[in-house]
Length: 419
Image 1 (cartoon, rainbow, N blue to C red):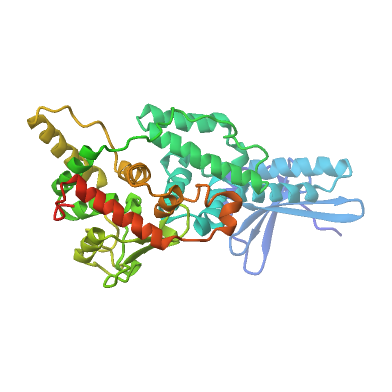
Image 2: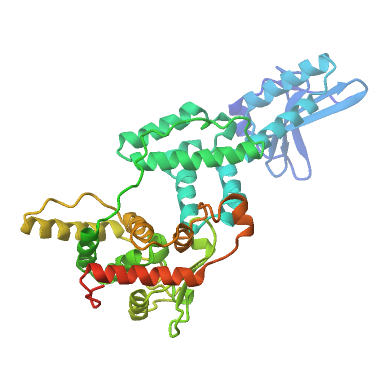
């Protein structure tokens, strides 16, 4: 005779109080609400819901672990499964589809896709500083609430909300930059068929972008050079190298002893590795005599061999405070001379000043100037020309840097010791 089955209404309180089954056995408690539905308890105390039924001539068994699946959820799922069976539908297929959907959703959360983007796109192609900016935007506090959301659920309104919040707290430039990084990220997602339409599509910057056009005049160049001494410590040499080489702040600040060659020869060179340049391409910088003198006087510190560091482990930071000291020195100097304050300028203007003066004052061909600052957007290197033109113009670049140094010396009245 078939074993008699006792049914009772399963409740959360009852399930919580159930003890483990005897050794080597398991206990089953059938629900009086849903036919074929019940709870199984093992001798180890493990609990799981089950559903037993038939679909056609085949026996059907389904189970859900407790407490990962609540009583309410398991009972509702069992009811839905019985309704599917009545329609001739195998509920296990629906369950499989739901599990697959959950896996896809988990795999395609904003954070998970962001990590894939970093591994597949950013890390192989972009400089370390650019990678850090992407991580700040994708995994920082502004987008933290998106981390576990399916990336397909991120809307245009969501993006606009975080950008507006950044603007409201005074981070206008950061908001513009965040949009640029998000556009690239969501565009990559669309290329990988993770998204159909990027939520940033045709979205305008939250604030008009200030295009950098500031170039220091000849008199300002002399003033600024003199003010570099007011920065004190390693910043004095670092800022001078910014003007002498025209390279980016992060590139000069991250200088390492191993990046130099031929310092005792007639052709001293600084090679910036690809992981430290903005365009991900290694860059050779011929060193003028003054740049060489500064570099040779700098100590090489720590295992990483930094020339500019306070810890020996990381590159120098604190540029803003050093720049403030320079600005304060300039303001005081002009005030004592009853001169108007110097118009606002940035450290990046030093790079733009060198490029402008090389073109306008020194007659250096534009493609040589572009090569000096590692630009690939000029006509000599852009498009098809860039595919075939692999010239590095080292001789011409060295001549350009030597001419630039002599020009700076002339501005200071041939005071070579100062420039």
